[in-house]
Length: 122
Image (cartoon, rainbow, N blue to C red):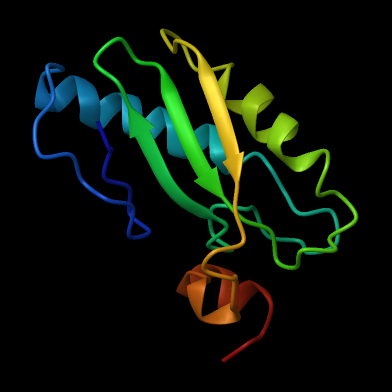
């Protein structure tokens, strides 16, 4: 099931997880995602808008669709593993799958206001 997060991630239609449990678990996932940084940009990948979707199954397996700021990013091979490792620190999480996509391509408009402020992009 897709879990709602503050940066526009889709919401599930229904989940076997109680709403408060899903909300708490989602908050923990976002906290873990915010520990991963693009090494060339001093902002976490969540605020950069690199996380496109987080699906949480009823048994708390998690699938993430994410992108990079550019297809030729030097950490393209490492970033999915960094995201997986960060998410695996969340208590109660099941299997973690990270899918890298470039469709749609990332643009600076996907950054949160916090990230734009941090990078002086206003």
